[in-house]
Image (cartoon, rainbow over all chains, first blue to last red; front, side, top):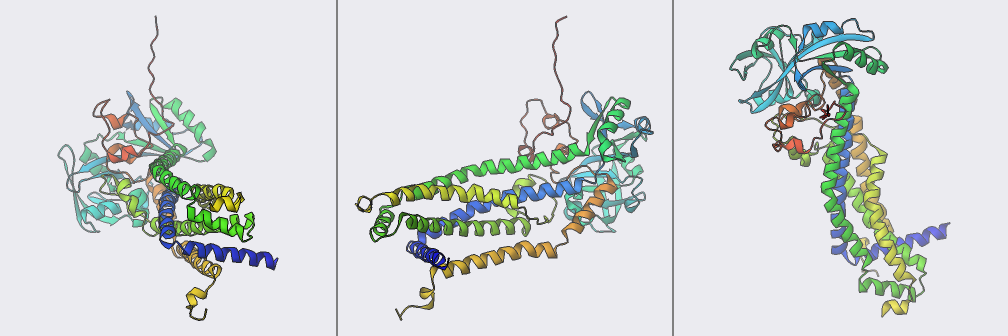
Length: 381
Length: 112
């Protein structure tokens, strides 16, 4: 047992010495390799983290949202529609929502103006008051007590006093919100008193959502019903798509790296071939030669993998994936500043290792085995 | 042999163990540290509570255009509202896939 360990240890010593003989080449390889792991790892960690955030946060949204449709386009729901849904079995609460978008030329940003639901005592507002999201406060330099002026597309003017700013913790869902009182909202957008943007429906038993949606659709055939599962799926699909797209863009880099690794490993240099030949000539077994060369590859990929993963983790969870921000942000002014909660997923790390370490080790094994199995005399010539 | 520095005398395997050990320790610290310190669960709970209170339906990640703000509630055709064949010009639209599971339109031709 001890002899076997010492034997491995000496092979490892030999591999390190062999790598140290070509420091520039090997350090360069580690750097490029680590960069590839960093890029792919960042995309994977970021995608998984944001999917988790979305799933947790959207899990407390309304089970069903009913939107009126006219000629295939979104329409306002009427108070009579809301009344028609009342009395449906399995429904716990029906909350008509009032919300809309406003392009604010002063802040060069799109806001989501919203009226807090009647049941929400925590965000109850008086006429002339507003609660703003973290992004709006940042863009317009607002603080509680300051005035916020808004101009509607029709030229209507709304003067509100900021009551409070929504906590930065929830920026991912509330960055662009401006909460105003109902009569202010209706006057600002010139809405009649009996219309609502859509209807949020809370279902008592989550397993009955589909049945309730079916029954509600019979009552309101002109409405579209979006379930919470649809919303979560949309977010899931959206970020999977995004992650896939980023990985597809990185596929070029991965391929270039694979070619580099294959080229380096398959075309063993004359010097390396000579080295293998000499080792065989002085009595090394084929097994030992392959082990020493695999140790070399393992050291390079292990080091690069560790460096790349540590870099990716730091980038995503300590710098909020700052390198990706310009891509995610687009032209949005109110892009939320949010920290991502670090969670370790063994499957992700294993996938990353499969994507990066396995091809490299495979590219090394075959040519080394072929050279090591050949006659030393033939190899050295 | 006596002229060698301590670094040269160190065995390769020892140096490997030191480098890998240090990196693993740094990595573990970076992974475990924020999990202990950051109050991620409480933060998520606060955000989820706000979603529940205000009955919110989507993440506020893409606010650059009206139809990218609530992808799960947006109409399928809104990105092309300026004209059915117009090319989309907001950067988000190159990243966001059209929502799935929403009813789509259908054209039917029948001979009477």
